[in-house]
Image (cartoon, rainbow, N blue to C red):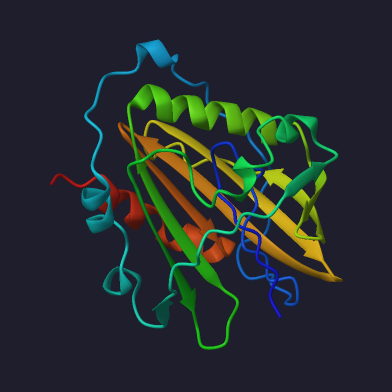
Length: 232
C-alpha cells in the first residue's frame, strides 16, 4: 500500500512528495551537518538568458542509458487535487494549500521524469527541469527556501491522511550552477518512515530539481546538471 501526495520540490508547494507510507526506507547518505546557504544574487542583477521550450527540456532529461543498469522509468502519475493542510508551519501555509497539490511548479516550460531502482525496491530518483528568466527562477528558490528553513517539523494532512514531516537543511553543492538549495525530509505515516533528499540548482535560465533516495540524488546530480545545461 502506498499513500501518494502530489508534490513539487520547490515553488509554491508544501514540499510534499510521493510518500510510500507503508515502507521503511533509509537508503542513502547519512544527514550531513548544515552549512550556511550562499548569499543569492539580487534578482535585478541577474543576466538575461533565453528560456528553453518544454520540448528542449525533455531532451535534456536523464534516461536509462545515462543512469545505467537497474533503473526502470515509471509512468507519469495523473495530477491529484486533494485538499492539503499544513499544520505547525505558518510560513509554508502561506504558500497556498491548493498549490501544494499541483505536482509541479507553475512555470509553463517544464519536463520531468521518475525512475525506480532495483526490482521491488522503493528507491526512486526524480528529475524535473524548468526554464524561465533567471529572475523568476531565483525568486522561486528564494521564497520557498526561506519558508522551509523556518520549520524543522510540521504536519501535512492530505486526503484524510496525516503525515508528519521533519526537515534538515543540507550543504548545497556550491560548485554547481549559479544558485543551489538542498534539504533532507523524513515523511512518517502509519508507523513507517521514508527519507527523501531534495536538491535544486539554477544555472542561468534552467532550474534543475533532483529528488529521491539520498544516495541516488548524490550519484546522479552532476550528470543531470551537465546534460540539462549542455549546448544545443
